[in-house]
Image 1: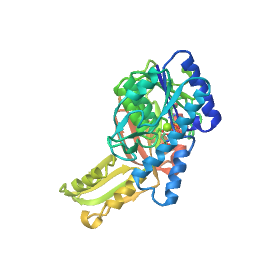
Image 2: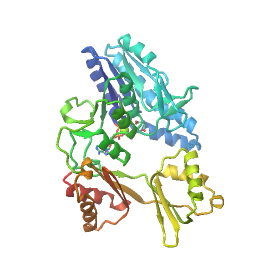
Image 3: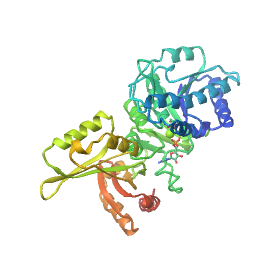
Image 4: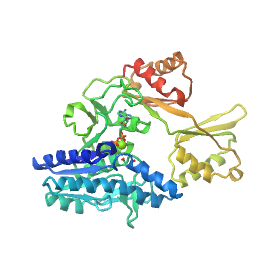
Length: 397
Ligand code: ADP
Ligand code: ASP
Ligand code: MG
């Protein structure tokens, strides 16, 4: 009993869809129950966003959700047809039809629950069920999407609800020490802990969506990531509670590219301004990170936080300088680079090695932050490739 998920590149054209249909039909013929989750074909989601921009109204999140959900709907219907064509009964379900009930936060809805009644009926009738990733509906039947990359979350949430294992198939062999597109010599990890994967994902490693790892960890779902149609499980990565292999101090390097630094200087230290600012951010339902405040010599506050560019637009659109009393500055052109590993808490010298390696190679860093299993630095965008390369070499990644 398995849930398999195929990402956009893996279902990019008819030949790929047919190849996956064949693989799925074979699994079914061998007597297994299988649910398949699929993303939109290739770059369809981006193409739909572009169309909406051309119409001139891409900031209507409700309509955007309806539009974007059609991308996944195309894939699952084609895949179900291709499976049926091989003589194996199959049915496609949209997120709504599959029972995904979500919050009403359009464009970044959260799954509240999954009503499996329909899906289970289809399975009982011996069908392969093909579910559209990335989407659901509110209790009122409004179509929602789960945020970019959300099909991973669809798959893992289904696996959790069904109590099945989850296999995520994509266009790389597994989770690598760092994005192989930035550093082709990166090594594949056979295993990684939920905790490390969650950090790497939230710090920018887009190979898995952060929430899917969170759900897998919470419900202890066996999660596997590998290349589509490469079914030898020793060639991918298992994401699990604890690793069987010895811990290296550093597991990987992540880079967050869509990054805006927001800064307010010389605030009166009375708590009023920040209270109002945080209220605005909460009302806009924005997640910010790396909040930091310093007190200057004259007892004034300098305050910074980070968010993605779209969110920074939203903040700037709603921030009224004359009401708030201070100027908010946005700084672009930086990326956040993080070294991640459970070994950080147990090995000394990681920070010094990280900083010295960058300095030796003429790379400037700005803000430094850390957690128990990660150290993050803000660097200039132009230094991204080189920084990843020299750090990967220094830590033998
Ligand atoms: P899918 O459409 O299948 O969900 P994604 O594009 O979302 O695929 O994720 C796969 C991509 O993630 C890879 O092509 C790779 O460039 C990128 N990636 C980023 N960080 C990593 C990493 N640490 N290991 C492997 N791939 C990574
Ligand atoms: N198609 C959506 C996206 O491009 C969801 C996904 O691929 O997981 O973000
Ligand atoms: Mg993805």
